[in-house]
Structures are given as C-alpha cells and as structure tokens.
Length: 552
Image (cartoon, rainbow, N blue to C red; front, side, top):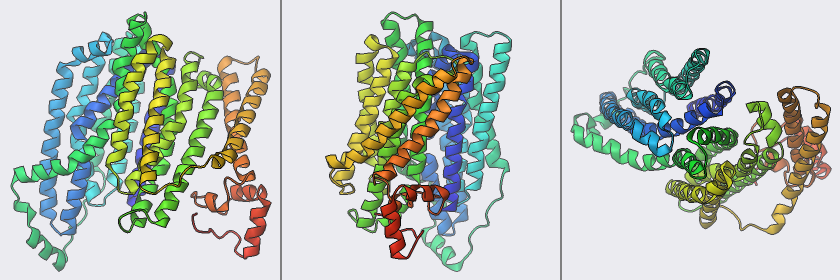
C-alpha cells in the first residue's frame, strides 16, 4: 500500500507539472502556438497509448506471479519478451506517425502542424521500452524506481520545452517551428525516464524459500515457448488497453474537429488555431479539477476492493461508494459554480487577457460532470466492474464529436465547451446508473439536494460579491495584477463559505468529515464543530470526543 501510494503520488505530481506547464507556454508563445501544441499533444498521447497501453500492467501482473512462485528466471524472461514486443510496437508507431504527419496535419485542418507531429513521434522510439521496465519493477513491488522515472520524465520534458521555447522566441521562429521545437520535449522526457529506470535503485534479491522453489518447479514457465508467452502478455493487456485508449479521445476529437469546424464557419487556418488555443485555456483548468477528483478517487479503489468479500455489494462498500459520490457532487458543483463566476479574473490572471472567457466559464460548468465521472469510474472499478467506465466514456466521446459538429459552426469555441459539459455529464450519468444497478447507491431524493444547494448559493454570493468589491478596489492596478488580487481571495472565501454552510445546515457532519484524511483532530475540525453545536453536544455526551466514528 505504501508503494502504491508512492507511485500514485508521483503520477499525480507528474500530471500536475504537465498541466501547469501549459500556462507559461501560452503566456510566452501565444494562443496560436498553444493551439498547435495542444492539438499535436492529443495525437501524440493517443499514439503512445496505442503503442504501450495495457502491457505495463500485464507485465506487472505476470511478473508478480513469477516472483511469488520464486521463478526469477521466468520473470526476467518475461521482461525480455515484453520489452521486445513494446519496442517493436513503438518503432511501428513511430514509422506510421512520421510518414503520415502531413496527412494527419491536413486532417486536423492545420498543415503547419506536420513538423510538430514528427517531433512528437521521436518519443515512441523510447517510451514503450520504459513502460515495460516500469511494469517489471512494479511486479517486483519496487515502486520507487517507476515513481522516480515518471518525475524525471516530466521534469526533463518541461525543462526541454522551456529551453526550446526560449530559443525559438529569441530567434523569432514561426509558430509551426516553435511548436515543433517544444514537442521535442516528449523525446527528451522519454529518454530521461528510461535513464532513471536504468540507473536508479538496486535489484531485489530473488526469493529463495523451498516452497517457492517447489512452486517454480511445478509451474516452470521459463521454458514456455516465446509465442505462447507473447500471447499471454497480449491477452492480459488487451482489456486494459481498451479502457486506456478511451481516456485521450476527448482531446483527440477536439484536435481533429474543432479547427476544421471553425474554418468551415469562416475563420482562416491561423485564426482557427488561435481560437483552439483560447479554448484549451479552459481545458487546462478542467483537467486540474478532474485530476484532483481522480487523485482522491484512486485512493478508494484498494479499500473498496478489500471491503468487497463476495458477489454483490455489502453494507461497508455501499457506504464508502455513497460517501465518495456525495463528495464528488459537492467538489464538482463547487468548482463549477466558482469557475463560472470567476472565469474572467482567473483567465486574465493566468493567461494575460480575457479572450476565451465565455468558453472557460462553460468549461467550468463541465467540472461537475468531470469530477463525478472520475470518482464514479473509480468506484465502479473498485467494485469489480472494469468494463462499464470505459464503455460509458467511449459513448460520451461519440456524443462530444456529434455535439461539436452541431454547435461549433454556430457558437465557436463556446459551443465546443458546451459539448464537453454535455459529454462529461453523460459519462457521469451512465456511471451513476451502473452504480445504482449494482445496489451501491441509494435512490436519489429531491430533499437531499436542498442543503447542498444552500451551500452553493452561499458560495456564489460570497465569490460574486467579493469579486465585485475587489475589482473596484484594484481598478487602478495593472490588469493582470488586479485579476490575481481578485481571483485568489475570491476562491478562498468562496471555498470557506461553501464548507461553512455545508456544516451549518448539517449536510457535512463529523462522521463525514472525519473520513477525509487529515481532517480529524485538526484546527479545521474544531472550526467545523463550532458550526454544529448539536453535533458537538452529542459527541461530548458520548464521552469520546475526537474519536472517529464509523463511516456512514
């Protein structure tokens, strides 16, 4: 569990670095380069997923079997075959992406993106092999090296990107050349991740108990024919790959439809790519919200899996699932309301001007669906349903493509943002329906929404009122400084008002907040208890102040 937490934390930090680096990229290079970068990055992620999806997890599982049986030789042989398979798939993907770069760029409606596509394809020569080594280490329960490798990859990628961007701006390169140079960071990051896997840590000693030696003799997979071993790897990897490929579809659909649809509505190719960059400002914020929700939800999967003792959903799993979904509702709704109200100051503070504010506000509303989708998918996986979240997200991606075609010609990037909100809402609704069919969620009641609605009203009033007041007070300052001094206090005040009202009306009680890690016994808990005197008196009467009660 400690190793899983280390690896999950490294993955979350890596994603956070990758998301935040988009802000200086847009600030320094502008929306057109940012649009080119975002479109090509979505394509590169899809190809890297196709080249390696599922196989690292399959390697991890199969290596763990071999290590548990004491078959060190079989584990190393499995790594060799997986590395060969992934290297071949990466080489094939690189060749296709390099050769088809002009065609893919034309399909995007951005012929100038071809060089950036070729630059991004270089990562496919290295990244799949790194994925195989990470899976091998995870199968041996050596989580430190994969965690270090992920961080080294992301840090090297961002460092290379910033250096290349500075060089390109200093020498006044074109938007196409700047985007291509920035995408060289993918290959630099992949090489750094591979180097970290090769030089960090030390090998674990093979298990050597007599029971494990006898088990290895009984199984003896070391002499398994190579083609049989490859089939086993692929057979385990395919179901995982099917789910992994779905996740990047939203970005890929936007990359291939949005610029072309904007051009069909009368924009030039350059203007369409600039608008696509403005749209991706809001996408970056939406990714932060969904990342936070997914990071919290990832912690639920092991506990739900361990709590599930047989077929069906027991009372403990049902309580954990209901609590997780309720938190997702609160977090997603609060983020949606806050981003919608504060879209303009946040946009100016982060991206220097207010272009694309309407689309950012609509994408803020998509935060509710994104948070619910991330958490409900994790709950379904923890309860053993691995297929439904991937299928639901695939259906939502199809809805996104159809809604883009219907809304973008008339409403531009605001229409694309509305399509994203509807698509995430559809995926979340399908996941919640699946949870109810499993018996993991109670039937919703209208009365249950009254108290959180009061909390959202308090958030909206606080954030909106303080935004008007601070905007007036900071009127004479530079626009970006004024926006920053408006956005940050409003976010903090809105969050405090929302949490206080949840506690005051009884929607959030001691049983619920003590299930949140780090809150029990903290100053924040004492503050919340002051808002619920009845709860405090009941706790004191029980004679166990501060003792965490069981989860509802």
